[in-house]
Every structure is written in structure tokens, then in C-alpha cells.
Image 1: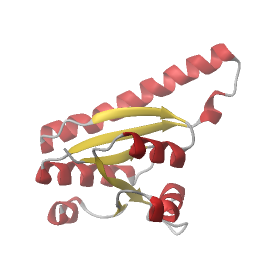
Image 2: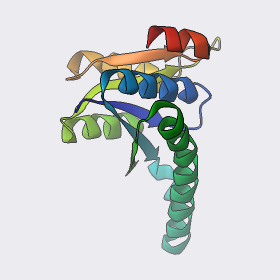
Image 3: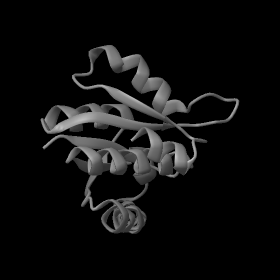
Image 4: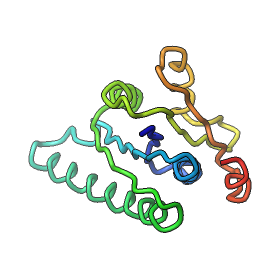
Length: 151
């Protein structure tokens, strides 16, 4: 089964990327993998404190994931899976794509402010020529109705 890989982060545009991936998966019989990446710099403390912070980060991610997963199950009939990785975002995305041959499309949400699409979109588009799969970039300000029409 072809899966759409979506990166879960705290950005506003992440929501539309999730919606797009779930809708496309529902219409094409695919799946959705949601990748959450914990940056390594969050844990450069004493070992005990770093372990507690890592666990708290995982709990926040799992709670955030559950909101998206419930919507995907209830509205789109898609059961997403959560992948947690620690490291730098681009290298972890590339590693996940390399490790899972079922991933067919990377879906990213683009910011809609004057600063540009966001650092992740900028970095991944620079690396796109070497990727074994296409990238779909979903505008951050696209409406739900427009998403439904194009998926």
C-alpha cells in the first residue's frame, strides 16, 4: 500500500498537510504515516533531566497525533501510524523514506507569511532532486473546500 508521509510539527500549515494526506489516502486506498521529529538540542541537559524532557516531548507528540488520528479515522476512514524519531529534521525525513519502501509521497505544508514557505519546505525542496519519491507542498492558507475539491 502506498503511504503518504506527513511531518507533524507545531506549525499552522501542518494542519492542511495532514488534511491533504488523509483525503488523498482515502480516495486512493493509501495510508498515512505521520512523522514527528524531536530535535536533539532539546536534551542537552543532565542525563536525568534530558530523559524526563524526552518523555514529556513524546507525550505531547502522542497527544497531538491523537487529535489528527481521530479526525482521519472519523472523517476519512484512514488509520494513520505515528513514527517518532530524534535528530535533525531533514536527515530524519530522508532516513524514514529510505527505510520504508511503502512511502510514495512526502506531504509538507507551506507557510503563508512573507518569510517564505518555512525552513523545512525550503530544505526539502533543495534536496528534492535526490529523493526517490515526489513531494507535495500544500499551501498553508488553502481552504478546506479547495482541499476537498483537489483531492
